[in-house]
Image (cartoon, rainbow, N blue to C red; front, side, top):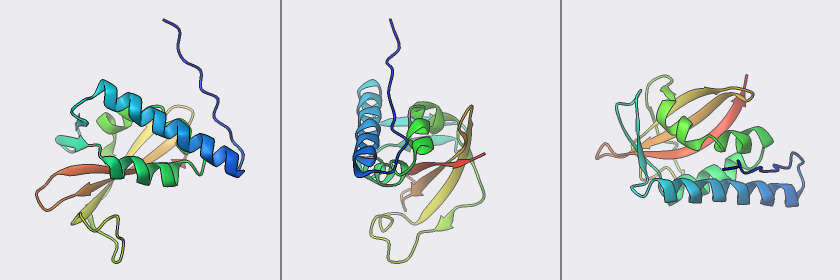
Length: 140
């Protein structure tokens, strides 16, 4: 079976941004088809990370801004499974509507060949449920 080739634009035009958003959306759609429970076990957290609608929209909003972040998302499953905790959980941002459902945010990091360091934010609910919030490449 041949691997699918994805042409990610690296410009800053509205069309490039829209194309990268579409690519990220497709990555999440394929991932949820392969993972119908929409969660994966993370070794560092020793718990499941859930992927919700907020995960997709927040990541699309941030990751589509750069080529490297979009490229990193092609390794979504690896990032979810193997990212490691970076620091201690921090309180959510005041006034952030998207973070309002969480009590804390845990920053996690993952090294990807050819991309460098990728940052993932995981929202932690009062119940302890962990939800992938945003993934972006932060460089080498």
